[in-house]
Length: 148
Image (cartoon, rainbow, N blue to C red):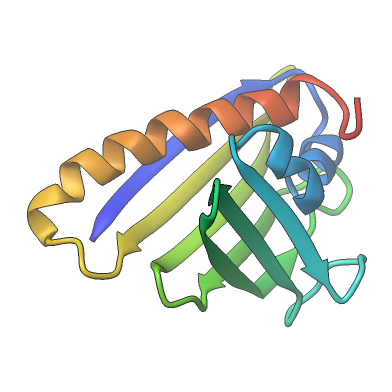
C-alpha cells in the first residue's frame, strides 16, 4: 500500500476550492498524458464514475473511480469526497477534503495507490511519485479556475 497525503492552503473560500478540485474533467490538464471522462454528466454524487485514461502512443490504461462519498461544503464549512478505484491496473482509493482556514481554505488529498503486480517493495517510490503528481495537480487546480 502506497499511502500518501498532500495538503495545500489557498486564499479561496472552501466552496470555490471544492468546485475547482471536483471539476473532474479539468484534472487532465494537470496530469500529463491523461484525459478524464465522467458518467453520468455532472452534477457529481455517489455512484458517479470518473475514468482517467492515460496513454503513451498505443499503450494505455484506464483508472476508473467511483464516487462513494460526496459531502460538499455548506456555508463555508468542510467538504469530503471519497473515490474507490474500480480498475484492473490502478487500485486503492482517494479522498479530497476541504476545510475553512484563516484567510481561505485548506485542501487535502489522501490516496492509497497500488499498481497491480507491482511488489510492495516499490511502495515508497509510488508514494513519492504520487505526492509529486497529485501535489502538482492540487496546486494547479487551486491556482486558476477550471477551463482557463
